[in-house]
Length: 337
Image (tube, helix red, strand yellow):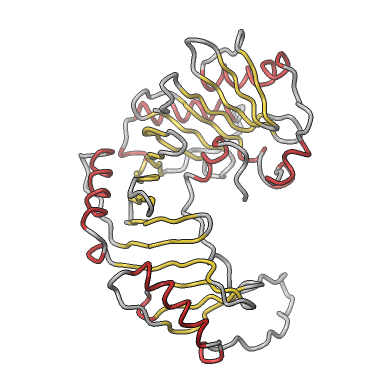
């Protein structure tokens, strides 16, 4: 799923793992009962140009620091690239088949192998989010490709992403069961889910994620999803109020518009100011207890922004049918909490 024009849709992505260029690089999918086509035997590492192999190794070594890297084998491929793995489960490097150019690097490290200042940043971030529970980080990935240049620290119930260039935290997530958090928050989420789905939604997932994300100005929020993956609800950890909601089914599959198609599909504004308010207001009243009457409206392609002095700003996106499928409410100070 490609990212849409604004942060609204990223509320879904915040519930998911970090995207990786190594996803689905090996085995093709076949229809039931259909025999797979005979594939040519995969190239071995020894058959690759030695300069290409050394370039790939150096690219991994650069990210691994003092941890020695030795390449092992070609483990998989995409249409244009080879996936080369390192020995001792140290990660992978993606290189193009024709030019031998490094596309991306993923190095796996132990926490003890990472600089102390990064470890301290992770520890202080997690304690700042929740100082009542102990969260263990047991693995680290150094990820570098055109879309990301990060340190990713992961544990069973926690993860922290740090920008490799600045050393600042991009995002942090803590995972809980619903029984571990304030029942009032669960009740708010259930009521919001009921309103968002017009009483059609299944129950909430038994797990909830506490999210802190700098780019999207998420100070600290609870991210919920229903068991069928059709709706998401985001509640401010400090305010206890619904701050974002998504009708996922109105964004995916036949309702999805790719980034490159958005300017064409939404070349002309779908709504006038009055009609935009009329279309969004019923959901805003039901889910957020917020009335858009008297708000000013601006739009860019599929994204509508509703503003009013002294009131929170609402940003919402529509699909190509004109259905508002997600909403974000930002307070005047700009931090969503």
